[in-house]
Length: 91
Image (tube, rainbow, N blue to C red):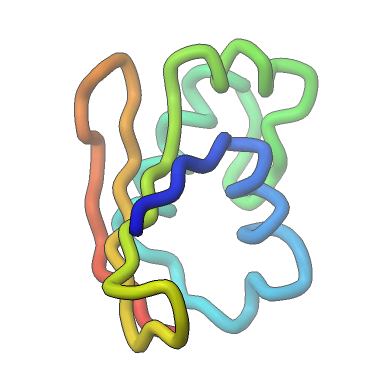
C-alpha cells in the first residue's frame, strides 16, 4: 500500500506532537534543505505562506508492507519529478 502526502501534512507530523518519537531521516533532512530554499525559513520551522508554492511540485510517498501493523515502511520525497531522498523508517 502506498500513500501520497503533501508537505503541509509532513510538517504537521514533523513539527507536531509525534515529532520527538522519530529521528530525522534522509527524507526529513532533504525536505529541510528544499524548504529553506523555497520557503526561506529555518530548520524545524514550518514553510508558512509559501507552502502552496512548495506543494505544487513536491510530495511524499509512504509505502507500507500491509494494511495493518507495520514494523517498517519506505518514505520517499519527490520534487519536480525527481526522487530527492528515500528512507526506511520504523516506529
